[in-house]
Length: 155
Image 1 (cartoon, rainbow, N blue to C red):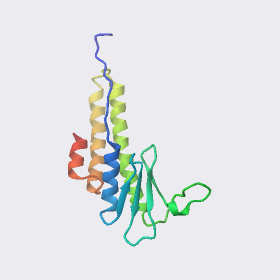
Image 2 (image 1 turned 135 degrees about the horizontal axis):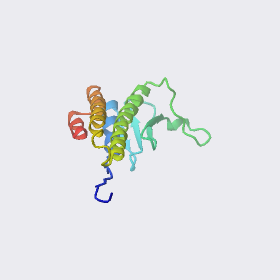
Image 3 (image 1 turned 45 degrees about the vertical axis):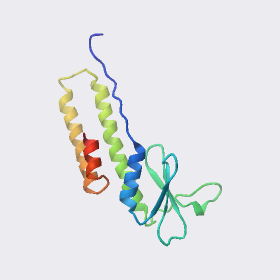
Image 4 (image 1 turned 90 degrees about the horizontal axis):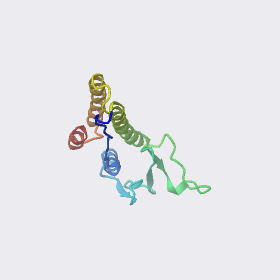
């Protein structure tokens, strides 16, 4: 049916901004932070620490905490799970996973409906929209997003 309009969802999303916001929110101002040009690594240095640590972001959005001073066999090891900064890394990863999940779900719904089953899609879209809003509200409440970022993403 060539008369039916089809659309392709296009999404512009600034991962750099999300990473920087989550790191700033969760690490705070007391730590020095220096980003790589591609924003895929953030070197952090606490006051009085012996050396820097690196938040290394992977393709899927999540990050690992690595210690460049413990290189062995040309590999930079991930810091142990009991490191005091691991809860911060978990909070950053949680924020990224929640937002990417909401985006994927929205794109999937927009792609699958694509003009078909218009009578069925509004309730499904509303359901996913509510779940996305709930996740965003959770991120706002936990301090992972500012009020301004929350409003911008929600719109």
